[in-house]
Length: 269
Image 1: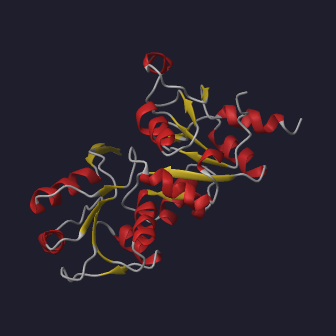
Image 2: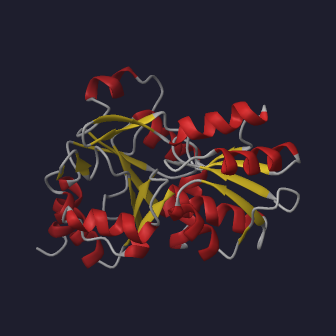
Image 3: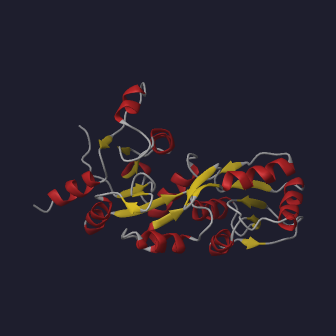
């Protein structure tokens, strides 16, 4: 028997195309988050943002009206720091990225260093302040054998005035200089960020519903990580895409996340 939309302990959300569209919230998104939280369920907004610390991302989302507390926003930076802390507590890390990356690494108890011989890891992400000095430190650490972690490899994102190079462009620069590819990519469509988000809510993967708009980046990553998924048609994928996806079964499908609000509000009638 199919599970009800309300029959999960935690709800993990993609952002763009699921809760937000450029410049505004998607109708029903605010109501869905409020209804889920009102019933005591855990919520995480999972984002590939690799520049800002999670509290800054949360504040940005709140400006759009999304009712998300700081600890309910799970960014690729947070996931990266937690991944390293789980794999090697207290590791020495050379950050190749913005201030938000350094903040999250320190919050996870990791040792941010510049000495190439001491570095256990090099972490590369979105880095608009890139310079030769920082690239040299990171490259030499990788040549010395440090583990290479990419926050995400997004080629570009949509800025206020058009496309902007994403974290993947900076990762590729360091990859080319060092002559080696990342050992681990954390952000979507990798499942690492999904696994770390699940760990943050403390529920089994099967009890966490991942809600997204992209069959490849959201549904596939969720299923690979052992989560059921909900596909909404407010972003990348369409009903025709789902129909053409041979052998793919999506646990829940809806026009928008407003379906979650409707389902939870029906419990109170």
